[in-house]
Length: 466
Image (tube, rainbow, N blue to C red; front, side):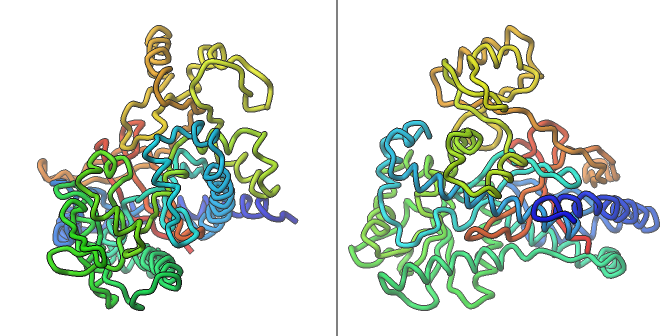
């Protein structure tokens, strides 16, 4: 009898055959229908729903990603344990100046995290980037500040489920769906309720989705705005530079705001700090609740993985949390000269180790997104790897063991060529976490090593095979 992680792992592994049979059945279904008509109808729904990143559709794919219920259970259990361990680490970083320096916090970031936000959860909404391989998952990164994609994923799901062929397939093969927007709203309102018990406010707050104008993710803000309104909330989309504050109320175009769903990233907020002081003052003076809080930056820094995988911090965690970390989080270290430990806990000279293990390592910025500034050791020759190491040594960089993204065959509708094209895509499964619990997942696909929409990839809804 398997218990705990082992039982879930075995069940998830055994269910992989079921998942692959489902994919094969879906592809067979596509061969039996008018594929052009299906593709055009699907894209009409996506365009109608403004499921776009900038000017391009985020989903050119003609099938969803599939995950079994057993894999969802395994993923949820592992991710929940890792999230709890990260929360413990974040609490320690919050009160430890040396750990703050190790994490790479700037002086302004230290000022922002020192402020008590009015609710406990540091990342009410967050997203892991993972690779799922049958009964195992590997965590590549953690987006704890304000992850995109939940509204997009639900809109893509709806577009598929409006196609009679897909709806019939779902009924025949017992396919279920996540409801990410619902779980997002629930998590936001849990934070609001905790905050308003201390500082007051209406039961149903006026929500402002806040980020800078002109961003390619603006379409998702509208998707979420429409969803929040459909659930009875007044909701606006606002640029933080255009907010007014009179010392009592934060407002946008004379609309008073109670709650900020903060989509503006901390780095970008700081870049325009002088222009966003009305928002900052209102948050600091508890006139408005803002989620995620700036303390989410403690978790968002990629250096959190270096602490998670360093055995000297494992005494802070439960045995189950440590087991999940060891099973899912790749060995990670801050890139700096000196002595550290290898994956087996043996002392090593880090430079010598990374030169010897170039083909196994990724060099990435501690605080960036969209695949910027990443060096893949196996894609460089020895001299270029040495150059990359020297170039980044005085900057804020991490080293991490490489993880191989699984690849799957997906059909894509090429609108310009008016035809279906099949490609083998790297697939990044992205589970969302709402107030510590896994809500669901979406999937990002790419032909390159970088599985993200910012770098030119696409996304597709993830559906559950029961």
